[in-house]
Length: 376
Ligand SMILES: Cc1cc2nc3c(=O)[nH]c(=O)nc-3n(C[C@H](O)[C@H](O)[C@H](O)COP(=O)(O)O)c2cc1C
Image 1 (cartoon, rainbow, N blue to C red):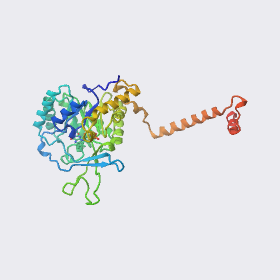
Image 2 (cartoon, rainbow, N blue to C red):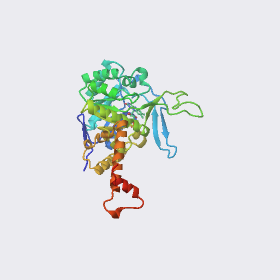
Image 3 (tube, helix red, strand yellow):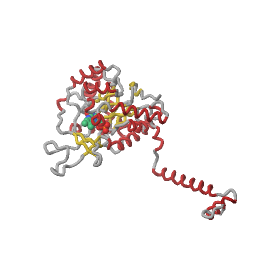
């Protein structure tokens, strides 16, 4: 019987399904619901020391639907980090850990470019009992106006410096959450891991404009007639997330063996999770999927992942983590492999045509059979 249990950076998880930072981890009540439903770990909505600077707008989501089925496949948000006070969060972290001592609670944190602030938030969250950290270096909207979030994550030097500040004081494991809005995801990966982070998490949302209303001629989501580019998530981003997951895992294998990756982006099923793990992820996070399907979806995800493991006779996640990375190569190598395969097929075909006794001569294949027997 396969098991989904896994230990990542010393954190013991009952399964690899983690609530990604966002509305599904936005207060003690919903975090408790996630543990009750069996999620492997919960990352809270990103918290900061001074929530008074965080002012959200309505509406702040836009969903894209399939023309045929009406199913939601894309989701843009212009939501900021948590607007709840830091003191409230500290109380709730304590309450959650009291009620769910075994539950793995990960604090997503974000601060301005200020060493004292980063070190203070780490210390205070640790005192409240959180199990580990995810550094939000990646929100693509709103916060970069204050040089936070993706404004840090897009600059590998700043990212390395800030991760270094955190690593000077953190006693718990730290993942840096990366933005996909960069040309080479290996650059921020190296920066975070060089600074000593135990792992990285990717991807946050992709900077996007989901559309323009053809009646009003206003882009969406329209707030008093205006908008700002947002972050794209949901099923539609999974191919980009998988590509980045593959690149990050390859970089980890070559340069930082033993460090970890939390894969994120469009996960809605156990089979989606299996693909992230095959490309090297240790855990998978789900955010928009929970907003579409509710917390209970984890039960089906777990069953599907177990069924995949049973089918392939994998006992543990480690048995197939990164298995599919070996099948990536260069285009030039694909051309070479194809030429070799075709030549081998032709040779086999010719061998097949080589008659062994006179009864095998055939009127239709006569010339090919003669050819196969000939030299020169
Ligand atoms: C409405 C919404 C709010 C989000 N808020 C946060 C946040 O506060 N901090 C963060 O690190 N990521 C945030 N995210 C990003 C998600 O954690 C995740 O990285 C991204 O949405 C891709 O995964 P998904 O397709 O499973 O949603 C948010 C996403 C959504 C849709």
